[in-house]
Length: 316
Image 1: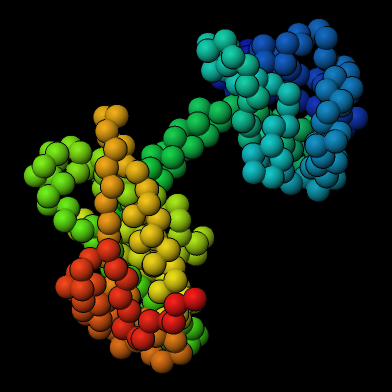
Image 2: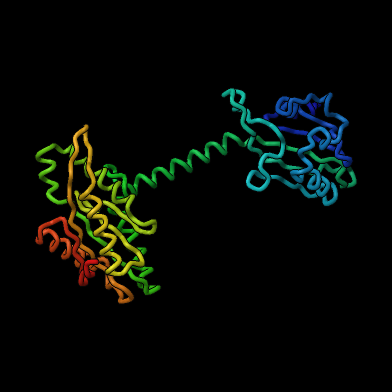
């Protein structure tokens, strides 16, 4: 005949049994190894005396409910954290102790009359599963970030910034809030590549993108549209405000010294702005068309300029 106590001793989960007085009547080898308490030390003692922390974690209350109702109960990681003060199995292998992530189940053990006279405590070490899930989540998050990020400049790529512009346009139409956007293009960028090499051009492009990104307001957005052209989204911003923001960016770039391999370079940019106040923007295409027209005007007027679809605000 099978010795059930011996069987439970060979399980790779914790198994303990308590009576109606919450005294331990069984404590398998797994519990002894992880709790560092032998069977002789715990048998016959109230479990909350063996492990006082169980009282604060609601274990005692739940155990009594199982005896009273005859229904199983459980503790999960999200709600109850680590019920038993055990360390994960991997901790001992890696020699860096970490709390065991656990699922704990309290199961009623019925006598011949159907009454709950004992409760089985099952403790599952889910640390490896939690670690795997966290790694998977981090990987998914990183893959999503990479899919939305331009490799060179590390700002949002074309698809990402266009998705954001679509969202902002919907908000503009629904809530009648101002919206502006700017197209930014580096002046004479081909000359930089031709004169100093594409590596230098790439480094300047990346530093410029990071510089502009850091100068924008928290609620603005910027992305690389292609080549040396960038889209800047300015939510809840009217024409006058958009001009001030864009021209501040232009001025900041003009004054910035770009360093590549201990050599400094200076560049300028041109910007074309389009936007509307409460008046509805027909489409992204119309917005781009207007911004592109203003960018062309800035280039044709000598570069290192900011041009806007509405009249420029008077100089202060």
